[in-house]
Image 1 (tube, helix red, strand yellow):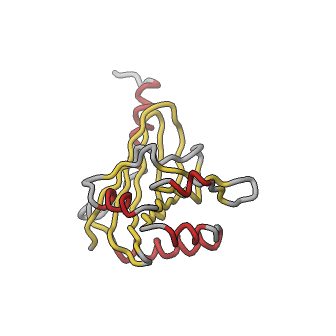
Image 2: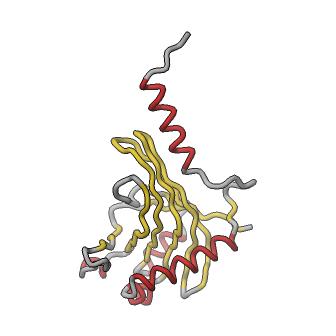
Image 3: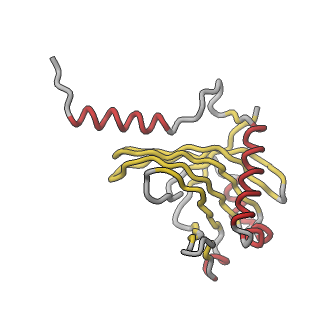
Length: 189
């Protein structure tokens, strides 16, 4: 008879945590429910601009914005994240994307959050749109919420090709980062 060890327990919990990041069951995992995503993107942007009105100025300077209304992230040693969103250019949704990441290391917990990637140059937007699978890296600048609840941006932010705003963190995991996230265009249905 086999003995249930801590290693078995950790493996089982990690598998459940990663499974918890999975999207709702759909017949084609690379198809998007466009009506649902459109609604979430619209609600996310209006809520974000109500809470942080200074982001409207950033939006007006951006070539486009990738809006990911809800990302789910979980980990216990092994982890991952998953979410769906849309690319908005001049106020119109152009394409739909899925964001995924896998992590390994000291981590425990789960959280949900949203994020928006503002592409501040046409070159950054074109690189994103023309890649087979764009990965977020160290060239992204982040908005940081200060003690007053405002988003702090500096002159380096204004010069960054991609600017990220992470918002609405809820859960038991500390911190959210987009580095290592892969964004892939998906088909709508």
